[in-house]
Image 1 (cartoon, rainbow, N blue to C red):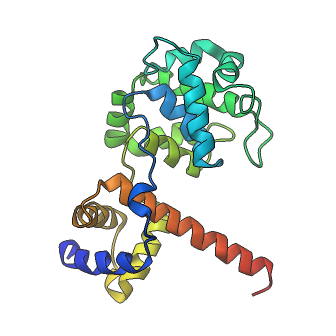
Image 2 (spheres, helix red, strand yellow; image 1 turned 180 degrees about the vertical axis):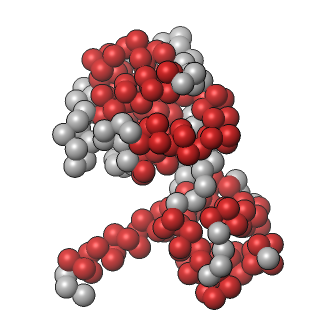
Image 3 (cartoon, rainbow, N blue to C red; image 1 turned 90 degrees about the vertical axis):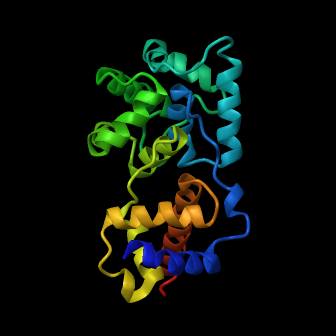
Length: 227
């Protein structure tokens, strides 16, 4: 059934995806766990250009380091992470939460290291094998919500099961044929549809997340205007 619906999903997405969607997804840091964690915490709340600026600052302030061992962030402590991020962003707080992003990054790194996850490959494997437990671990960090968790996973190239809002959107695109689809079936469809578009799964998943978020923002704006 899933394979039969892939052409329908591809056709429906062809009508709604913006022209630049193939190039919109940042590459991320699949071999640099420290950078993936830092940029993931920021990427869910600040523009892509600012995230790139932060990554550049971290790399310039870490000469000779591979930036793929989370113990480096644990040992740096919050003050060290603030210095790594730079003056412009080091002291910023999470939107809606009075907590510095550097503190969020440090606690997340400490928790991951505490479970034996230090390197990018280990985080990728952990997400594949026990996604829910890794998600719950990080979501327990104050100031790290579902959007940030998805962003961290995306930056380290750890594919996630689609969120409930993405699943609902895919179902809506398919009409009655999509009503009975389960989350894992939607994920399989995203993988297969990405192949039809000749892109990686992560690129299409990113585009879907952008579509869903933009629809939610429009709905909020209309609600605020009384519509």
